[in-house]
Image 1 (tube, rainbow, N blue to C red):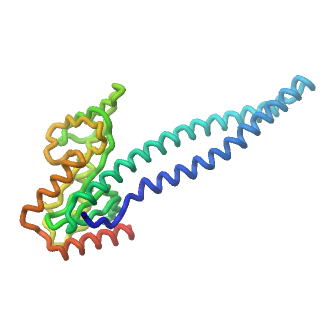
Image 2: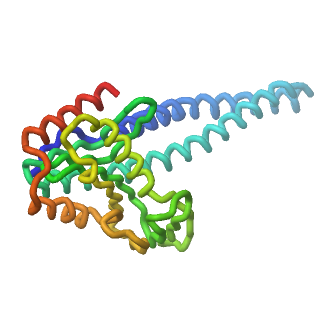
Image 3: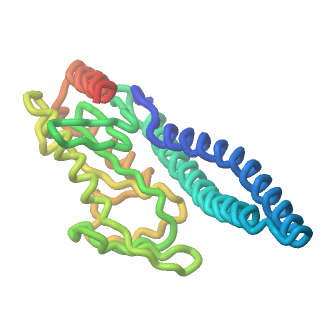
Length: 257
């Protein structure tokens, strides 16, 4: 079992922020619709009973318009909350797999924040081991995933189970950027840069991976663990003391970044 130093927090904070927003929208919903109904009824009574009340009706209409806008925002927030929960579940599943299946001389840092100079990034999972370091970018895409690891921008396509196709940015590019920022942080250490591996993990069990030149860059969670564990049979590039020092140093840096 690996040593896990940090757990996922970014999506947790986002979920809590959405939950607070939804709570506020719920209270506003009652006030806005109640006030809109009150003004509209009062305006109708006043207008048809006393031939007045246009301004009151106008206020009621404005309040109803605002309430409808907040209803749309509420639906968007509910969808985002569901997506956040699903993504967080995928990342936690990968984190648990790394914790359970890697050796006890491996350190795992989940949701690691790095800032080097003017550049910063969030690394979903970072494994620090005697064999090197593994930068893992976790995605939860579902359906048939078609792309080429050598092409950038929105060149990948995801065909969802319902048949809809949407473009997607090549996630390998993000993993490579995170690796570069990490390597800049690692300047002055004994770790050889060639032993810092960027990995994209497609965590959804319903992902049909049809990626060209995937190799060891785009993997399922289980294959990613196997890839990391296979290096245990090679000569280590870091001592256990160096591994711990690097992992603890990154953990401290993440708390300051």
